[in-house]
Amino acid sequence: MPLKDMCSQVGLDVTKMPRHVAIVMDGNGRWAKKRHMPRTYGHKEGAEALRKTIKACVEFGVEYLTVYVFSTENWKRPEDEVGFLMDLFRLLIAKEIPTLNQEGVKVRCLGDIQGLHFDVQDAIRKAEEMTSKNSVLQLNLMLNYGARHEILQACRAMLERGKEDVSFSVSQADFESELYTSGIPDPEILVRTGGDVRVSNYLLWQIAYSELFFLETLWPDFNRESLIEVLKQFQNRERRFGGLSSDH
Ligand code: FPP
Image 1 (cartoon, helix red, strand yellow):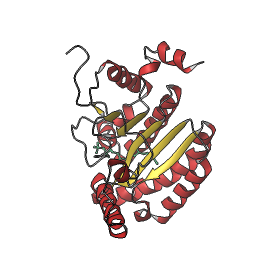
Image 2 (cartoon, helix red, strand yellow):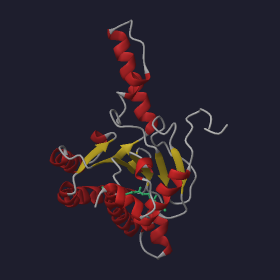
Image 3 (cartoon, protein in one colour):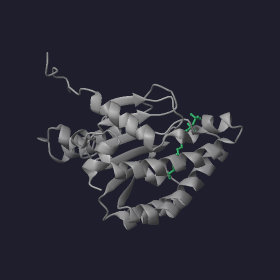
Image 4 (cartoon, protein in one colour):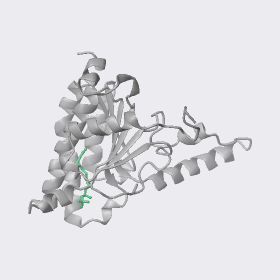
C-alpha cells in the first residue's frame, strides 16, 4: 500500500510526517515492579516495545529512530543489572539483525562504544556492517551516550582544528560535523515515556527545536497506537522556530 494510504488509514497526514523521532525509553523497571517481577523482566518487555516501534516507524515512513538504550550515567546501577543489560544488548543485537536487515533497517550504535564490554562491541560491529547498505529506516541505538560528553568532544575537535589553522572560525555546521549524529537531521519529535519530565542528558544540542512529548505510559506498554497518537499530536502543533504564527 502506498505510504500516503498507510498514513491516512490511521488519520495521519503524509505531508506532515517527521523524518526523525527520538525516544527516551523509560519505565521498564516500574512496569516489572507493578507485576511483582524483577526489573530485568521489564527490560525484556522493553525490547519487545522497541521492536513494535521500529515496525511502526517503517510503516509510516519515519527515516530515523534514535533510542536511548544506555546512558553514561547508567553505570551507576547495581552491577548485576548492568551485567544483565550488557548481555541483553549483545543477544538482542545479534538475534534481531537478520529481521531488521530484511526490513531494510540500517543500525548505527552511537556513543562511547569503546567503553562497552568487548562482546557488545563485537555484536555492534557486525550489526553495523551487515546493515550498512539499508535505507528504509536508520535505527540509532544510543549506547554509553551522554550529550555533555558528546558536546565536549566536539569542542575539543574544534580546538584541534583551530590549532592547525589559526584562521578557522567555528560554524554551526563545523560543530555538528563532530557530533555522533553528524549527517542526521535533528529530531522533530522527542518522546519520553515513564512519567518523568526531564531530558536526562539526551541529545541536548539536537533537540533545540524538537517538539517534546512526556508520556505517563511505561515503556513496555508503548506500541504502534502510542506512536500514532504522538504523530497526530505533532501534526496539530504549530512549529514556529522562533518566528511568528501565520495568523499573528
Ligand atoms: C529505562 O528503564 C530503560 C533502560 C535503561 C534500558 C532500555 C533497554 C531496552 C528497552 C532494551 C533495548 C535493547 C537494545 C539492544 C536495543 P528504567 O530501568 O530506568 O525504568 P524505571 O525508571 O522504571 O526504573
